[in-house]
Every structure is written in C-alpha cells, then in structure tokens.
Amino acid sequence: MFALPNSQRRSLAVFAQDVFSPLSWLDVVAGARLDLIQDIGIISSAQIKSDGLCAASPFGDCTPRGYANLQKNGKTYFQVSPRAGIVIKPPVAGLVAKVLYGQAFTPPPVAALTNQTPSENRAGQSFANPLLLPIQSRTLEAQISVEPWKQQMIRLGYFHVETSDEVVYDALNQAYLNNARRAVNGVELELLGIGADTYPLSSATVRCLLPSPSTWTSPTQ
Image (cartoon, rainbow, N blue to C red; front, side):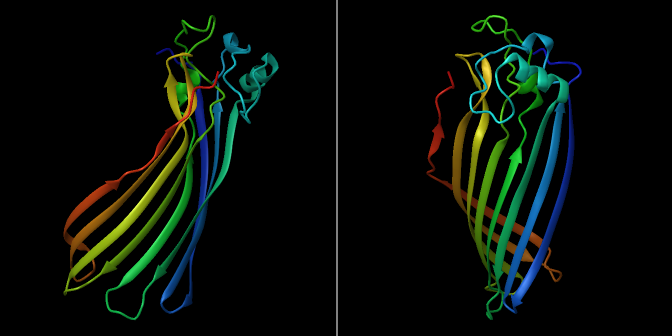
C-alpha cells in the first residue's frame, strides 16, 4: 500500500453526562459526545479529477474544483452523539433493571482515504476514496440483575448493535466504498461472585448471538 506521506488526522472530543433521580427508585442518565475531526493531506495532485466514487457525499463533489478544495482545506467531521439510559431499582433487594441507548461514529480509516495503489480498472486512479462517509453505529442494551443469594449476582441482558456506511473494498471498482450495513443481536447471562465492596470476585459469562439480518448494498457505479 502506498499512502500519502503528509496525511494526518487531528481530533477533539468533549463529553458530558449527568444522572437525574426524579424518584427514589428511578435514575435517568443523559449525555452527549461532541467530536470534531479533521483530515489533512488526503488528496494528491493526481486525484484532482472526476472519478465517479462520491455520489451523494456531503463532503464535496467529483469535479476538479471539489477535489482541489479538499486538497486545500482538508476534510472535517463534526457530529454530536447522544447517549441515554434509565435505571430502575424497585423496592426488592438486589433487583435492578436498566435500558441504555447510544450513538457513535468512526471516521473512515486514513488508509482507505489515501491508499495510492494504482487501480487497474480505473485508468489514472488509485484505491483511495477521499470522500468516504463516517461509519455510524447505534447500540441498545437492556439488562436485569438480581442477587438471589448473599454475595451472588445473576445478570441477564439483551444487546443490539447496528452499523451503517461501513467501509469495504470493492474489487470491481478497485476502490474503498461506504457499502455495508449490519446488525447484531444477542443475549448474555452472567453469574458473579460479589465481594463486600461489590467488586466481582469471580464470574462466568454465557453469550449467545441471535439470528440477525445483515444487508450489503450494491457497489456505487
């Protein structure tokens, strides 16, 4: 792989979270993460031309002018990712239920943005796609825990993780594209031995993935 030697990524993140307790048995968690990421030097002079890979991209167009702007100013990702949850503690000793939801994103790999390996199927172009979108993810988790015996805890949980705009290599176009979406569902059973300070002394976990649809879209032509 031949990457651009002067490419670099700068990042800044701010996270805030708070817990509200409107009732003695109910906690509400709310938070957000702010990410500001900038990629510099991801366009080479040879790439300032149309290559047909950036349809529907919010980061610019496929014209020489659009590519020249990316070369001059870089590429900036700005996103707010919310997180929320509720924790229910009914008046039953050791019983806790919670539901958590969160969003996040991951910028495209620098290697996929800057890979200068020549493409055999697209004359004068490389594997790089400087107009890739960030990878988006959403998670949902529900969990119930109970302490049936002294210093013993049982946790039963369900989780759902969904990602979209995953970056994959398209062999037909010989380029990286936002081209995949997948979902994972599962259940988890955990047995814990709890010490006096609630620190787990021992644990055993059984995790089972449920049948989940994974959708792979067709390459952008």
